[in-house]
Image (cartoon, rainbow, N blue to C red; front, side, top):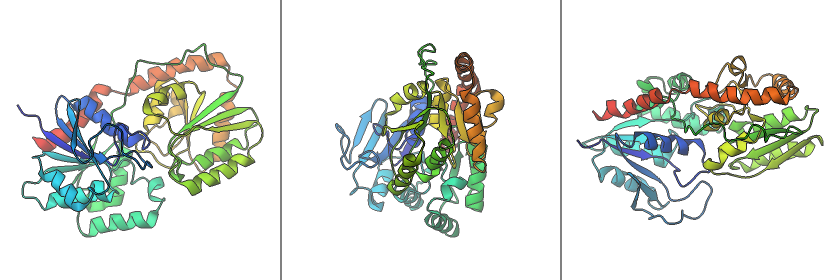
Amino acid sequence: MQKPKILIFTSYYLPGYKAGGPIRSVSNIIQNLGEDFDFYVVTKDRDSFEDKPYDSILVDQWNTIGDYKVFYASAAYLNFKGIKELITTNDYDCIYLNSFLSVKFSLYPVIANKRLRNRASITLAPRGEFSKGALEQGSIKKKLFIWTSRIFKIHNNVKWHASTTYEEKDIENAMGNSARKIVVAPNIPAIGNGITQDSNAHDYKNFNLVFLSRISRKKNLDFALNVLKEVKFSVDFDIYGLIDDQPYWSQCLKIIEELPDNIKVHYHGVISHKEVTDKVAQSDLFFLPTKGENYGHAIVESLLSGTPVLLSDQTPWRDLEKAGVGWDISLKDPNLFLKALNDYHIELSENRQMSRKHIYEWITEKIDLKNIILKNKNIFISQSS
C-alpha cells in the first residue's frame, strides 16, 4: 500500500539550526512518522541570517535524505509561480505549513492550492505566532495579515495544528470563524538517554545561569538582565542564541554594562541542537522569562538534562514549583523571579543534585511519547484517508 504523501513548507530546515524550535518540530515529526508517510520538505537553501547556501546540497532540486526528500529553494525560485509548480509536480495528500505569517512558505501555498482542481488538504501550525507576546511584536503588520486572511476567507478550509490547549485558544482568538477546525497535538520531543552531566562534576562555587533562545523582544532577555541587577551573590550568566533583532540586543548590552561586578555575562553566539543538552546540563538553572511559547524545545531539553527552569507563565509548562522542577512566574512581578533565584541559590548542593534526578524522572513521566506520536499521526491520517 502506497504511503500518503505530505508536502511540508518551512522557512528553515536541517542542516540549519539557527531558527531553533520550528526546525526541531518538523524534523521530529519526520523522524517519528517516516514509516507511515512519505515526506517532502520545501525550505530555503541557507540557514537564518546566512548569505550562502548550505554545502553539499542541490539547489532548486529535490535532495534525497534518508527516506524523505528536501527541496532547497533559492531566493529566485521562491515566488508564487515556483511555489505553485512545487505543489503541482506530485499528487500530495496533505500540505503542512510550519507558519502562518510567512508569505512565501504559508500564504502562497494556500492560495496556489485553492486554484487546483485536485486540491490537497492543508494543515497549518502557527508555532506560537498567535500568542499575546508574539502579536505584540510588529503588531500592526501582523494584525493586517490576520485581518486580510479573515476578510477574504483565505484560511477558511485549513485545519489548524495547535501544540497545546493554550495555543488552541490563541488561534480561536486571532482567527475567529476562520479557525473552523483545530486539532491539538503536542510537539514531539527528542528524548535522549537520560542525564548527561555527571552529578559529581558540578562546581557550586559560582551560580551558573543559562539563557538559550533567539535574542528577540519576545524572548525577553532584557527582563532577565534587569532581575539580575538586584542579585547579591556571584552569578555566571551564559547566553546562547541567534541575534535576530540588533537594536534590541544593543539595549541588552547597555543593561549588561550596568550590572554589578558579581554578575558576569557571557554571550556565546549560536550553538547547534546537539550541543544544547550539554550546555544546559552544565548549568544550575535555565532562565527564560519569555513573553510567549507554544511549546519550548529548549525548556524540555533543560528538564531532560536534570536542570530546573525559571520561566514566565507564558508557556504551557505550569505548576513547576509544586512539582519541584522549577518556577513559572507572572512577568508582572519581577521580584518573584528574584526571590526564586535567591531561594534556589541558598539550597545545599546535595539537595540540588538530588533534584536533578527528580527533574528528569518528572519530565519523562510527563511526556507520553507513544500518545504524542499517535496524536501527530492522526493530524495526517484524517486528512489523507
